[in-house]
Image 1: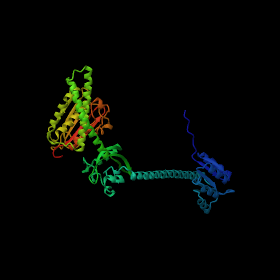
Image 2: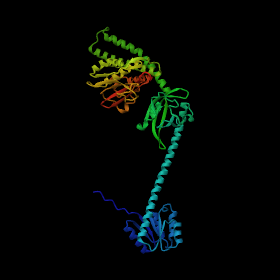
Image 3: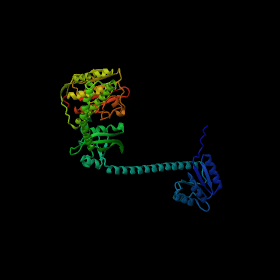
Amino acid sequence: MPKEPLNLPKADILVIDDTPENLNLLSAMLTEQGYKVRSVTKGSTGLRGANAVPPDLILLDVNMPEMNGYEVCQHLKASDRTREIPVIFISALGDVLDKVKAFAVGGVDYITKPFQLEEVLARIENHLTIWRLQQQLQAQNERLQQEISERTKAEEKFAKVFRSSPNPIAIATISEARFIDVNPSFLKMSGYSLEEVIGDTANELNLGKNTTAMSNDKPLGVYAQTIQLLPETGSLYNLEFEFSTKSGELKTILISLELIDLGGVPCALLIANDITERKRLENEFISLVSHELRTPLTSTMGALDLLGSGQLGTLSEQGQKVLSIATTNTERLIRLVNDILDLERMKSGKIFTRKTKCNAADLLIMATEAMQAMADKLQVRLIINPVEVELWADPDRLLQTLINLLSNAIKFSEPGDTVWINATLSESRSVESEENQPSSPKYLLITIQDEGRGIPEDKLQIIFERFQQVDASDSRNKGGTGLGLAICRNIVQQHNGKIWVESILGKGSTFYVLLPLPGLQ
């Protein structure tokens, strides 16, 4: 069984009095009230006891041989170890000057003999309470001073790192995305002066392209939209943006953001990394390699087709299997090279959309018909709900996007599942578009919904990046290149549209494509 807690004394009191009767009386009274009492008859003995184990309070007689109470109190107040102990004088001397002298040497109270026990107890309890409160206040002050000191050191360290960092760093408010401080590296990258930046937003300085939302009837740039996600996420890492300098030069940067608090104001700490040159070299390398691969791949495919036609002799069953594997993988490699070239041309502006009047229903029907054979083979049912509306768009590119999204939905469905492709008219740039719309809708919302395995939450943002897939084995098992969604996003953006995905793991995904109707582009 657990031991019962010991009854600890209310306080440790040292009584110094040369009269044994007083000592016995005070000791008995205080012990009865739950105090621990130490009694001594000499001032020098009391000083040694107080220094050895400092009590919580001292009752001190004035008239004592060898060393009187005033002298004892002066010695107590002169020592760091005993200075803060409250001292109550108890004496038969009732003259005002005696009391004044007692307070002058550091006493907190003065009780005249003969005393009432109730009065002594009340004064002891009052001064112990005051002393404890003072101790708590002192401890709090020490903690506060420590915190202030640590915070000051941290702020000084942060300021030094902030100013000297080779990476561009900025601090902006969450509410309006206004810059409140930037470091010299940020100014060097942007071309602006500190006075030009502080108090303005990235949108007002034209630092970023693609104004895509409104807040309080004011346009929000892509940076502000990202900053306003921080209260929910807390941090965002390695987001790629286009950055426009004061001179109009476009740079590619990676930004990481952290939610911080500055004097009670929620702010975003932005750390940028200029990857313009790295991206240029990467794009040149990918383009060069892709072009160099195309010629031998075309020759290889021709040779495989020739082998498969039987013109060079009949292959054994094992030979046919090897040929099939080689053909499948060569086709996949050709798709990868073509996707890379397509994406690089789009990003470099070498592929231009050829926009013309086209019908949304026709595009949805054509995409469904193109993917029907694949759906039948995998035993997936396709359901289409088109809408008749005119678009000003590049029909080939939009058809490429729809086929890609449908292909993914079918590939990641199980036999017996259903894939839906729907179209509705919308008044806003969000999902809430549905029926009973006013007579002048502004957007076409296309949804491709499946019942497949779904996408983990941490993958929802990155699957539109190049070479990103939910599972690394998908490229082998499903034949994907990891570039299809990046191409879709680029095509939709070239139409001033928006593409995103919502998913529940294990229950399926819904891809949304929002396109402006003629008159908004």
